[in-house]
Length: 255
Image 1 (cartoon, rainbow, N blue to C red):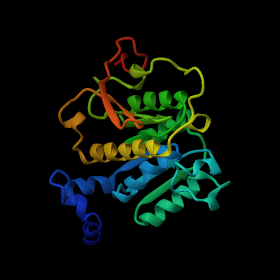
Image 2: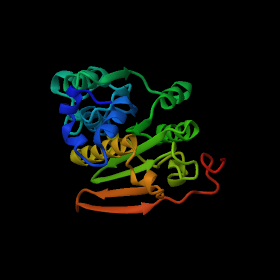
Image 3: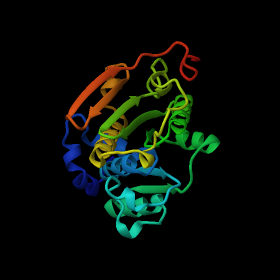
Image 4: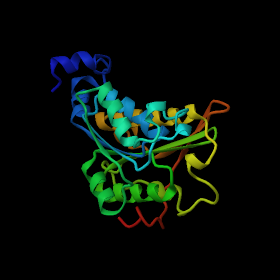
C-alpha cells in the first residue's frame, strides 16, 4: 500500500473518494509507455510523474530544437541540440526522484514497439505521424494494452481513449482513420500549431491515463463506447463524437 511519505506527497489525490489509498497504490505500481516527447509527451509526462505513476518509459529519436521551446515546456534553451528523451528524463527525475523513468533514444517500431507496449499498462500515443499511430493501435489491440491517443494541429486538438484491456468489442483507432496517409503535412514540426493547445491535449492524456490506471474511467466502469473529443482552441469549444466499430477494420474486426 501507500507508505507515510507517499501518503503525504499524494494526499490531495488520495483524498478523492474514488481514488483513496487503493487507487494511489495502483498508480504507484503502474507502468506507462509514452511514445513521442514533443508537446504532447512533455505535458503528459509531467502530470503522470507528478501524480505518482511508478514507472514511465519515454521514447523519441529527436533532439531539442529552438522552435520546440514555445510548446514543449520541459525543455530550455540550454537543451537545444541534445536528445529529447535525456533532457526530459532529467527533468522528470528532478520533479519526482522516486519515480522510475526509462528513456529510449530511438524510433520504436516492429518487435521492439510491440514488446514495449506489451510491458505497459497504458500506452500514451504522443507521436506525430499516422504510420506510428496505426502501429501503436494495432499492437495495443494485439496485446490488450489500453491506449490514450491525442493530436494537435493549428488551433485544434483531438483525443480518444481505447481501453483494450477491458473489452475486445470496441472500436479502435483504425476505425476512426482507416487510411494510411494524410495528404499534405501532418507533423507538428512541419505545420502551424498553437502551443497551449498541444499542452492541453497532453494534460488531457495524463488525466485519462490516471483514470484508467486507478480503475475509475467511465468508459470502463460504465461500458461506454469510445469517443473522439475535438477541441477548438480558437473558440474555446469542445465536441464529442462516438466512434463506431467498422466491420471491415483490419485491426479490430478480426476478433
